[in-house]
Picture (cartoon, rainbow, N blue to C red):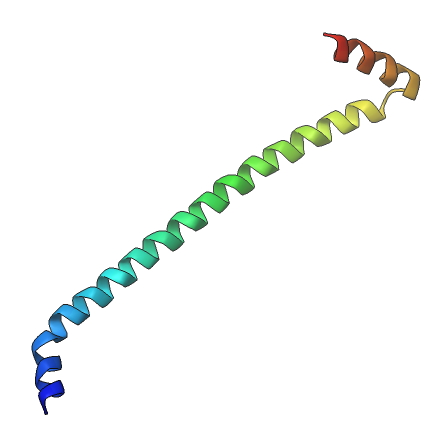
Length: 75
């Protein structure tokens, strides 16, 4: 009976702690999802730029690419 009386006395505090933990977990999960979305967007931009470079290089002869790369690496 003592445990039940103690629980009856402190249940509002326990409920508040549970709600606070749930709120913290929700904020953490939303922040993590937001960061993942930003990173995915940045990766998509990088992939698009890389594909443009690959397409530009693919349209030239290997000797032309080597010459351009030599000039680029010295600058």
